Length: 261
Length: 335
Image 1: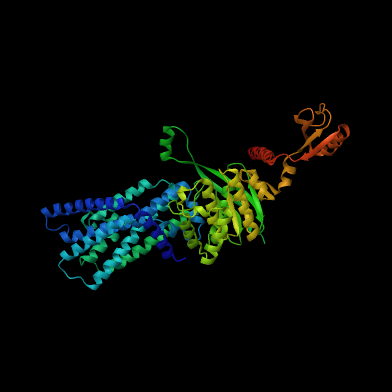
Image 2 (image 1 turned 180 degrees about the horizontal axis):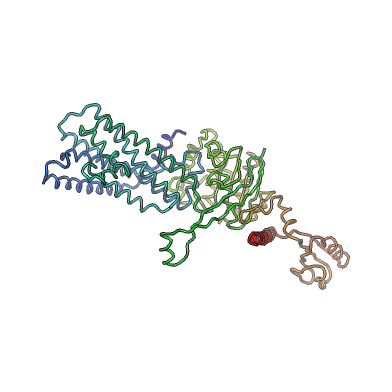
């Protein structure tokens, strides 16, 4: 079975289900608006005192924030609900039924859920990015547009990998929901370009938890900072993350012991 | 060629040892102790096409663990298993499409979706052709009498209704091997019977092999001619149901009714029940013929029947013998 078709089927079901709860849409709108407003206030406060932050102008930082919102929408729509459902099902023993199906278990776990209304963040993120780009004077080249699209796709994949590696830990430790919150906290650090952080934190956010590649690199694509080397490295890092994720998953399945014997 | 072939299959679980009390909980934060539990200790058996076999054992005997290894959910720690020629632990899609694992009181359907949508999703996952799907669905819906449930969300179904739909969904891809783990648990008698009939009919029509665990002996006696008894991870018995009582009980019961008056019968066997004209006696197997002959000679018998003890009692007896054997083996290992 084609993975995309199966995903489309599940997403359709998920969307149909969520559309019944219209109030969630408004709640999500309010939630997104508050987070957008606090983000804008922070940028405004910083630039009330200085002209640039470690070489990033106001609009450039806006671009970083836009990408952060967009990717957080992707995480909350497609990734987080699936990871939480997986952690729950592995504790309850329902994961048995995922393994019993003739579809790759990692694929199955990754596509079962969709929080439709969280797409609001994706839309708001895109609007903020557009707003930021219109304020950045330099004209953007084709390389930069394609570079940005490649980088932002890699960013989404890297975030997926980070969540799935964490999810694979549930095979061994079962209760990893608290750790999932930690990952969410770390993700907040991506609101700012990693270049503004001190060296040790920058290195951590680049190579341990590769948020730099997920968020800062796409922003570099929008702000004429991206070069071919960085883009290539991003693609390689994404590939390596996918391999690590797969290995962690297969190791987990191999050692799965079920909720009850 | 057997559809299921198991040789010396083993599974060991690493279980954390938790002691009670706050102090021990704090200590376990830093130092975890584990214990190895041998859930399945080298079992071997095989199933032929079309065969329905009862898989019996007390709780924790290793039944579910064995079924999970055979359906590819758990990796065995030793031995080999072949199901339809596949190694289950490799979990090839082709293998998973051709076997089904159904566990009572577990739900594998989409909770919020109407049943029909859940079935449709199942069709997509198992790649069942549209025409086959519709034809099987119609037939099974009629056999299980679940036509009215198709538009209801799964969460609104009763336990019995859900189990019927669960079985229907699992059989739509036409599995050739069925692992049923307590399929009738918690269901009323009528519902149990319906599910039994359906499974029997499916196996007869498709030639599928079925391995069935159940605590309801009625399930086993109605469906299976052969039983495998597993106890503390080892196989205690593998053979036909009648053989089970031969092997584990040394007695049969004689029910006798007479026209006149029955005196004391204690010299003939253990009296389980008696009134003036009817008695039930427990008699050692080797003495059955002579006791029956004496009854017929000494009394004006109006009715006499010789019965095996109820299957529940036989099973209980088998587990007790298994316990004793296992304890003895442990003693041997220690000394």
